[in-house]
Length: 323
Image (cartoon, rainbow, N blue to C red):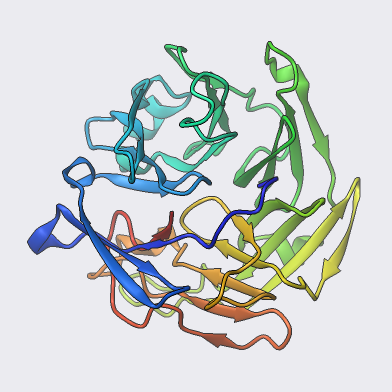
């Protein structure tokens, strides 16, 4: 994000025995808060980049934006209006998780009509956009090269999407009318041996566009939970080139099952750290307990990993995520 934010809360997974009560772990204070949210029961949720805001979807394909603290609810067009969704159903895939990532350009509480919501659609992992008042989504032409996107960030009127191969697409929203012709492709040239087959994240922070590679997400076999982070690598993108970043200074990155955030950490958190949650979506439904295993704090300086939340929180639909 263009503006650094406070360290997010970790929203823990829904519990079967009391689904309306959601717990939130404040890692900067080491305390857990609980609140009653019947609005979230049984829903798939992802964080959208602003404190308290969630994107949610239910099994009927209804989607909305929900603010945890004010309980503001913004209804979105239904999921079956997204490009490629019908094909997803034909494949027998789980419709509720069709949206992989969601990102707001600004806080709807402060800019009620002047914001854009970007989605990464599950198939074929292309972009869709929505503005307040629109009755449908605008999909970016899937013929744009390198369009299998892994993550998206926003800065100064532009969405930046990164593909699983580490290539970057810039979408220009500085004009009043958006057209897919506004998309520009940048060859970031991150080595394929580094980016391919891993999770890739992107964030704009302190004048720098950073791409983060996560190794270890896909190392699992059906029925076990052998996957897990082995290493993170951070790159700064300079036009059509890159350089590896080995020192983030007084910055921390928060990434996983939501959009990526960069913050100047408050007391209780540390700079040069990557705070991550489980993001091996492919494994969630293969595990009896669901996702939530692969979480921790990665020290970029020495490569060590320690836990942030020491309790257990698992779910097949929405494991713990940053909000």
